[in-house]
Amino acid sequence: MKSPVQNQDDLRLIDRFKSGDAAAFEEIVLKHQDKIYNLCRHMLGNAHDAEDAAQDVFIKAYQGLHKFQPHASLYTWLYRIAVNTCIDYRRKPFFESIFKHTEEGKELVYDLPSDAPSPERLYQSKQIGLALRISLGKLSQKLRTVIILKEVEGLSYEEIAEVLDISLGTVKSRIARAREELLELMKEFREQK
Amino acid sequence: MKCRKTKLISACIDGELEGEEKTLFEAHLRGCLECSRRIEGIRATRTLFTNAERYKAPYGFSARVMAKAAEGETKRFSLFPLWVKFAEVAVVLAMIIVGVISGRFLMSSFMGQRTGTISSSFSLEIFEPTPPDSLGGAYLALLETKNEK
Figure (cartoon, each protein chain N blue to C red):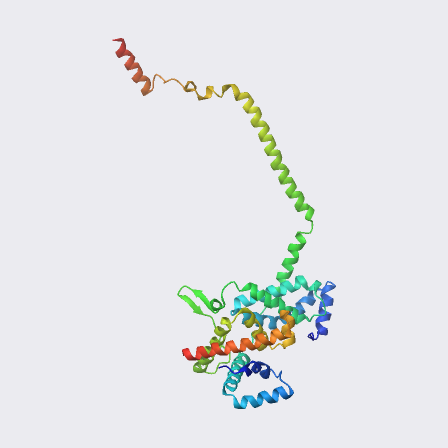
């Protein structure tokens, strides 16, 4: 399997960290925090859990970086930690994560796009976005993870295979299945409307 | 019945088909309504992902991570003189053992002194006789006077 290219900047930062420079780790965090946070946000569905999980990812990385082997790339290693952390983190079901409990009952938690042009379009995009998130939540953990890594994070088949430690063939078949299932779930959502 | 070529849709979307396989599948798409609908549907769903918001880490995220990491280091450092922790536990255990042994010793010496008096401790003789100025004493005195008459 072709391994993702190791970034030279990352290697230098890792070397600095291993020789006792803690500031190098902050540079690693700053460089990768948006990618990791975005993945956690899509995997977990809400901002609060996503921040906690993303923090845990970097704490685990901090504790394990001394054992990091340079044949793997840092960002796929971080993605792997993030995927495992999110899987462990999801004690509550995915659907629960898009609602928060208030005194009046359950309230929908959904982040409005900041540049939404009109309330009508906002409503439509909100509905479609919500449908996608609910459909994602109905996928199995394996299919959801693989489709988020592919479509949201834009990882290649090889990178996904490295992150999840599975074969390229498995990645391809899981992505194909995830797309098929999502298509059916989105269709169901449209029919219900 | 589901078209058998639908399994090639995902590979086609990701540009994984090459050469003759690609040409054949593209020709198939022109004639197969099911596959062409599916590929359009999946492409539309992919557009939703493309339009999905990319979230950025909240303000101060890295500082919070570094603070947590430093906190973890401090905790680890405090565990460094491990023998001190073991010594603390050993002292507490020694105190408990000394307490138990001395307690048993005191108990056995106390029981040795009391052995002869245990049976007598069950007797009602240990109670004081009825005081004469109490109500019971007055009642007994009245009875005695009555009997004498």
